[in-house]
Length: 381
Image (tube, rainbow, N blue to C red; front, top):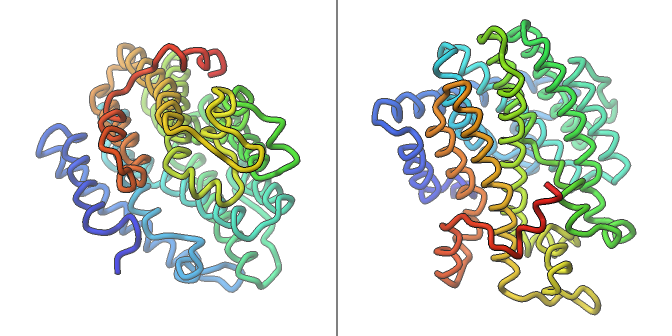
């Protein structure tokens, strides 16, 4: 039986979206080849690298569901679709693939540690693990946990993966002095956002939040800035005198893009989050809009899910606007990048599509827009 997300239906949809994003048949073949090569290389790398007694092996983590094979396929897919339009005109294929692998390393280390923090770590352990991840990425070293348990060894494995980011920054983009500093600042911002997101599960803290504090603080857990930060490091390495407006514009665009995806994901995962006692953006928006009551059990109006999608669209459209502005300056493949944005939007909502009983919900989702009653939340983003 195929792993969820790697079944034939997902593969067919993924290939169709790849053909759409590629634009031409030759480009499709090139991108497909890059995705396949990056996936095989990265999986073999993990098998070879995670092969010490103080580490959890790749196979061990797969069996424990701490790691999933789809992380490799999905990260190769999205890293290729987002990096290629930005870098193809200034960097060679070897440099583009190097950046794609760095982004795969970044997200795989993050996802693995996320799974540990969600399922096995206490809040205090999770906070410490994030600090250790920051140290691994910024310094390239960390102190391994000496415990022989799977939990400790899996954390060591996640941190070893994360430490490869420091190696990539030093060896592949040594001239990206400015963007390295920016990337590390954004990494710290991400870590702090992750810590704040733990309040979503805390009965003590979650009622002190509202939709505005959620958008202004908790949603900083989005990885958009650090995701594109690695592309920007390669751009600075290849483009002499990279303009500040390009750096700021692309960071802004990907920040809004991934924040929109966090919100779309909240819609898709509402039932799962509620079962785990997590209040996400659907809950906070519902309370603010008077469409959800939390006293004596949850009761929500169906239109709340559409409102939350539109809140995601508010962020998404800002991502699109920022990308277009930067494209006029740098001259990268703006059309290809915006197709990547659209693919990511559908990808995040795939679980909701499969469960949706009302076809109007799916039709409504296709039309990206922000109605007047959602515009007021723009002041917080």
